[in-house]
Length: 394
Ligand code: FEO
Image 1 (spheres, rainbow, N blue to C red):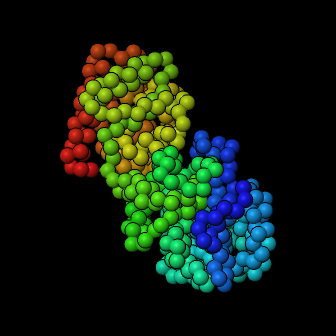
Image 2 (cartoon, rainbow, N blue to C red):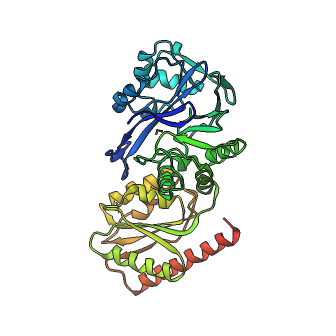
Image 3 (cartoon, protein in one colour):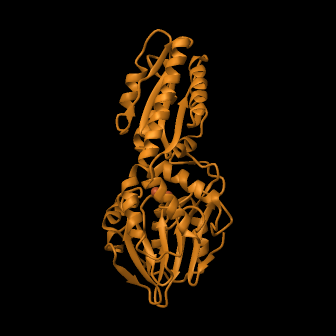
């Protein structure tokens, strides 16, 4: 893909990865992704904002043929899908200096063996002039690494936000426009890696709200030319309360747990509670995490295998614990043959989730009338708790 104009003297150079289907070895990419970097040409100096995944260096190199000189490479984030081509860029432009946070500087040395002499650290809120363009650095740590920052072009009121607001979406459209699908992909991205850092993100949103922002150019997905929508969505995800939604993660081996799930789903829906059930033997974990960003209650339904929860359910519980969702209530249901420790092990796996644990419902073999009644009572409890949340405006 050739260089594309974002606005006067600012260009997109990057690579669209249409066919990539997995990120970090576990995050599905149903719609591919892109690695975006940008060129800012001032009247006196030129800066590259981030680079691309090293697997796509050839594409960036091809576009850089039109860039005879580079004074700076701004590294907003050290993760290698954005910094991995930096060694090649620095080889190509021996006079270029890297601009980044002090934390990023040491990480560039550790992860990419960058010569520290070529790295200039910047301060929060300070500027670097390119002549007709001024870059202001806005520190945004923990989005989603400790060294992250955004770069604001004062003359254009444009923000380079790297992973913040990003969306894994391969698209030939340079701009997002009003497309809802971009916000949906951004939500999935938020849920997969940003959710544990919601309180930090809330502070950064407050900081960014003091700037006039006309566009946001992220490191994955299209440029937001109507940035109010994604900023409002981020505020909802990071600051807003959970929704009247039960996320129900289940697996059934011989049908008993499935009967319990079907009964509970029906009882919840009957009480006006939204439910998103996922069969964890085949679910898209990205969809699960996206629903988790909204769910007031998480219900885990598992058979007992080898004395504990099903391994896929244990893996999902571990992931939930890592993501630190705003979920308020947890419940465990399931079946067993003769005993086991599924509930205790799941509680241990989710011990970091700050949620009230509701009474579990377990049955031996097929569910009987008393088990169905216990599930109906659980639905009563969940519906009542959600009404209380709604009344509190949480
Ligand atoms: Fe944190 Fe897109 O890398």
